[in-house]
Amino acid sequence: MSFDLVLFGGTGDLAWRKLMPALFQAFRHGTLPADGRILGVARDDLSDAQYRDLIRARFDEVELAKRPSAEEFERFAQLLHFVRMDLSRPEDYARLAQVLRARGADVVVMYLATSPSLFTVACEQLAAAGLNAPNTRVVLEKPLGHDLASNRAINEAVRRVLAERQIFRIDHYLGKPSVQNLFALRFGNALFEPVWRRENIANIQITIAEDLGVEKRGAFYDSIGALRDMVQNHALQLLCALAMEPPINAHADAIRDEKLKVLRSLKAWTPQDLAQHVVRGQYGAGTVGGEAVRAYRDEPGVNPESTTETFVALRTEIANWRWAGVPFYIRTGKRLAEREAHIVVNFREAPHAIFRSPPGAVNRLVINLQPKDGLELHLLAQGQEGRRSAQTLVPVHLDLDFDKRFGSERVGAYERLLLDVIDGRLNLFVRSDEQEEAWRWVEPILEHWHNDSAGPRAYAAGTWGPSASSAMIARDGQCWSEEC
Ligand code: BG6
Image (cartoon, rainbow, N blue to C red):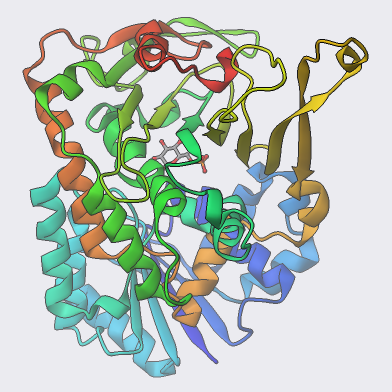
């Protein structure tokens, strides 16, 4: 099978940091179809040779194990070409059409790694140039809009010229091996299903913590904040994977139908919930990994009086038979104590205690997503104490390390997603109705914050967020994993 992958934003940050390294890995692993071209598109005036040189130079920033040797790069570079384009000029699309038609690849992928403000015009112009044939697939990077209305507007414009099966909306969390494993865990094993419900599960916590700040994206981040950047998409996708019903098969729509039902079942926000169950924070100066770091408001590009949140913690419920009454906690933030994403499933206590157990000790399944990738099952066992007649149980862990088990065989998120686009597999991409439902659910929070003059709560960089986050979960008699 032959393919042309057109990378709009071909000299941009995402192309350098994620896409080119991922494409190279697929090339190295021999999974990228051999008969392919990667066409970088940007406004710069570059020859193919200059574009290849630029990319070669940027590979120096990639971690050593993923860097090509000179010989490997020479072979990879044969796939790379450059097309100069201004996305607002129809004649440039016509020229692109000529370049593509001259080859007539089986599959043409248009990867829009550009500002979302260009999505609509780019799709319309591609169609006007006849570049929306059924063998064309368009990849849209997040954020798709900044609220429900803008998300709908983009989706409607794109769907006027492309069929839904041609549209690949990226949520790169779905491409992470650890997240795919979540689906495998739930739907490849019969063991968990009987206990995966309200009768046995007391609560579920989802944490996506980052130790980095906003880096070079200050101006962009300041206009969106953590709720739009992480909760509306990545965190809700994780919640869906945890809470959805088993799909009837592994096809894209079967999976998406079930995720959509979860999003539709999220409990509607009441004014009281918004006041008590949602915490927003913003980092101040502090220390991360032993180094002093500046406050969010002092980051380049950020408004010195910004009220944009860099942290969110919230509690929600899913109003259906499986989950009614079970709290789901979501927490994410920048400049937290560690880079760590995990899910904690806390099971209920044994219904009748014949042993003593330490306070707060319950069965717990910890699904580590990153940087560790694995499972820990916390059980209670009889330890040394058992020698005495009054028996007190002690917590022990079953620890499964997927990095150790599968390490070198695992495929990175963007590598997997790019290959899936070329193969036309939509399972790990988000359908428009899922996105819209997620926006519908976060909008009341945005509105509440807009009208709430209190602004975000301060937290010191290098901590786990504002104390209100612990207070929120403590009101339910619970604690975040690092606290208990
Ligand atoms: C992106 C967000 O979607 O995900 C970034 O825009 C965030 O702000 C990133 O840093 C986190 O991704 P990962 O894969 O490093 O957890």
